[in-house]
Image (cartoon, rainbow over the protein chains, first blue to last red):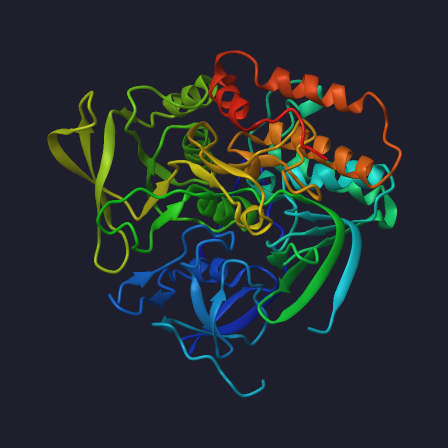
Length: 106
Length: 366
């Protein structure tokens, strides 16, 4: 993971390291930290492909306000990955277009 | 919907303004519920590594992220008066029955019935138009701060900063602290918008601040690999030759705009005010909006800075507690206004004062 190793002021206290999947690949991140941050630390910058122009999108605001970082998480589309905490075993996928809402109960 | 929670005072937003409002109202005895959309309270304070200015009352000399800790300690010291619900977003307000709806995470929904509310929803980043501004790698300054200062993630290898206001300057310095190269700070205006003390730190690090320059394009196929910049003349027309700078992050620090959806839903009387950077609610000196049950504080009332947001939060919390019939400490109100006037004094406060006088009312008719 691309993490800051030395900082003159801040100390980072990461939580428990967990494994999750991104588009089928196994990645590591910290439990409870936003999914988008874990992906970025793993060098993943493209989170979705837009519905019409098929443009790649990453995050922009990182505070849950702009919708740029929507992804499919555990089968649910349009999840704001910048404010959704990572959990062990999560299945994170690039969202293509609007995504399909699972209509059957989870 | 199944669940409704009840509270005396709902505070929407657990940042600088919201936490101060909560502390103030709970200090007077109110039962307060703070709703925060992020995974932790503290808002933008938790991302600030620089020491604050002002006086002791505004935590001068203390680094921003530590101020968040001080406010949370104050709240913790009030026992169970304040409940902070993180990872929760207020999604709507229904004026006909005074119900707020909230969403925790992506799939838990409930209602909140509050006697009074302080809405301190803060602000959101602005973006300027240029080709490829939607590609991954074009990030808001706040997002870059979140990555590196909250989660310790390296935002990129080389950054072009757009905007030489305080945020652009501070984040450039923070990038260097995190070991990231800043190729240049690009600013369309002929002078630096932020404080000289921040600009001087950038200059000392050898980062060029290019005034009268703008970004005209981002380059890259799927993610950013460069920024094309060009000089501007007095009329903001492009002159000279475009120049490309290699970079993998373009950080946008081109201003913020108040987050005001809930005020619109509440039917609060609003006004577009360029000095306050967007539409904002009218308010009286107690920070009460035209909706008698709703107060405003912080950047949601107009883009300013964290010190003023904290004092506004105190004023709103104090006033909301008073309207709940609680006993408040006499004299606090005038004291807070003295602090606010002090923060807005002089040349640096001119723009804010010019904005506030357009939206401050003497009082609301009963």
